[in-house]
Length: 393
Image (cartoon, rainbow, N blue to C red; front, top):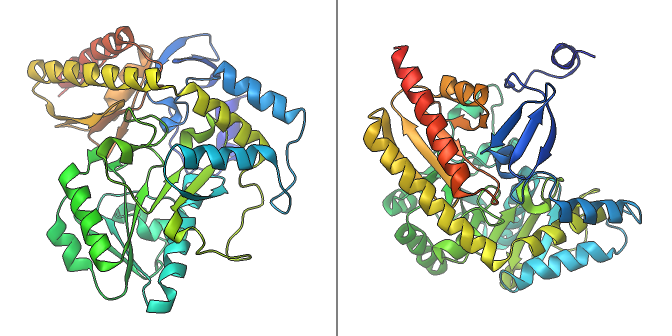
């Protein structure tokens, strides 16, 4: 079987894949079909936060698969209810809706905001330029990047895109029809651009004053990525709704929309649904992941992240092509003054997996188990890549 050839023949060409076939993963490492070992600083787009094939997550999923894989949401299952309880216990009083992905979790949040605002004529949702919320038509409409909109217009009406960290821009978007503000605490696909703490606090005050829902998209920032279980805990600004997916089950598909108590009964029977959402296997894996994300591990994420950002700052002093270093915890990016695609390939060729977004931003989303020694290896490899790339100019 020629995997690369057959991929082109049988799979729709929506991804420009990197030239590697991975066959195994463990912790912060991946191995390709030829047996080459890679240090992974991307974690499947912040999915494998507990490391590849985390033993506790694998064991929980395998045990559940041997007992019960699916019943649908027409019946009760223990793992789903237990996971909902644990998420609420670790966040805020409220309720959870489970789905299969980040786009679905955000879709649920959008529907909930519209249902909540229905009786007062509110349906508009303010999002932000350079945001990314998913690929469905609704979440695509919410996404503030024109390049994703091409070929799919007309998009869903009712979305306005403000400028991140500009409360004046938000105020200009607000109308009597505004139901909610949806924001990523840190824009991932948007180039690892963080919201200012003061800005998020201002949004909270504004939403309270105007009776608008404040909704956080934590698809990429959640599950320990910033050094707290949820990024809103890092920024100390509590939303009314927040969404999770990616690493929620350590590598298995699941999404969750967490809704604060005052709004948790907005949906009634029949308003929303998902056949596979919250299936027992993904929920069992997620429960194992939550146990793995101990306070000591989260403390280590903050320390390792601070060390990483510090070392990238030193690299910036040595390499003038780096415009900016930014991020929180182990969600880190460096903006270059030239496209970064070749840098990503150089790193891959030298055993390190990273990513480039927004053409010039190198994005690092490593498993939370990485060490300072791993950081040092990545710094050395990236520096070699930058020197090589600039020599080609």
